[in-house]
Image (cartoon, rainbow over all chains, first blue to last red; front, top):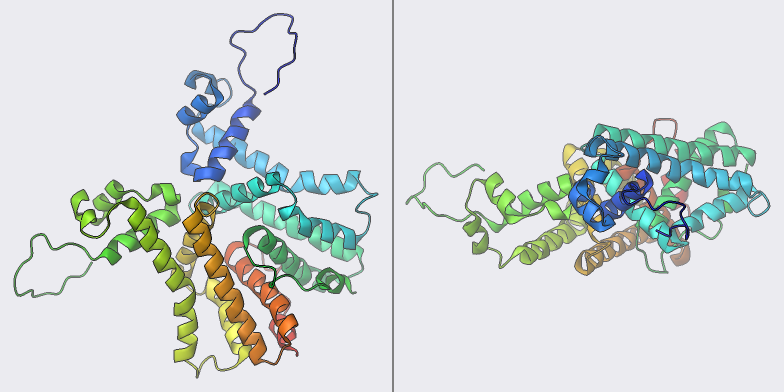
Length: 195
Length: 195
């Protein structure tokens, strides 16, 4: 929450960015599931009044919507766009798949993202909007993996099946706690890419 | 909550089975995560007083322990024991793996179990006992898959890697919502079992 050092005019009641509410909401979600995302605890955590919430959101449902929109964007397009921007480092299908497999264990931020995703998948069991967001994300990721495999000249039919298998492996790397003995086959990516 | 029709002596304060509390707790867990598991709502749902909780559990932490013990037993040994009892129907490694892959989509009970598991994995991100239960379960399942593959004469090293891949696929079947286009390769089990 760094502020610019010199503001022309102090703004005693400058409302927080809507973004700050959504980020704080993700922290609560990762910690205690969707029922932990409530206006009062969020306001307290952000050090603002409950009233300032309503600068940005009509109600809690509106915050939920904003969270799902943000998650949809962050969990797919931002990753894929990074590839498009940074072709030099991940310019082959093999490098892209290896980079993706490494993602879940790459940083504390990835660990936080995994907790958020678990909580959203749990929420999706009882909430239609969350279920739709999850379905959209799963489909977008599968389609992306399929495209990478197609780029390596894997046939259409094989690409779909292998995309599913790759996505399963990616999820296992994020959510399964295996000791070193159990890990993906060393030639996993290589075999997926064999036309 | 069927009761035997004729009891010799009516027992006005007969406490519920501890089991009933644990089962009700799993329902709350699947619905709202671990923070939703609280004595008062549970007592209300079960139609008993808060006090009767303490016939069975010292406190909420004791209920949590009982839940984790039950989950550990249900999520592994009960499945594996079913194989051992019912050798006729799942008497080959291929049949066992196919049967396991079908499990997540076999019944509403499996759907409920998947929600419980999501909630426990989320809980495990902040609770050491839950994290240990998850690690125990993951290890037991991986070890079981490894044994099935070894029974099919897959080498030790390959069996570990393939067990991981199989377990990843099994989790994807439980937690990923893919449309029909994306699914496991038809020869998935067959290839895993090739020595």
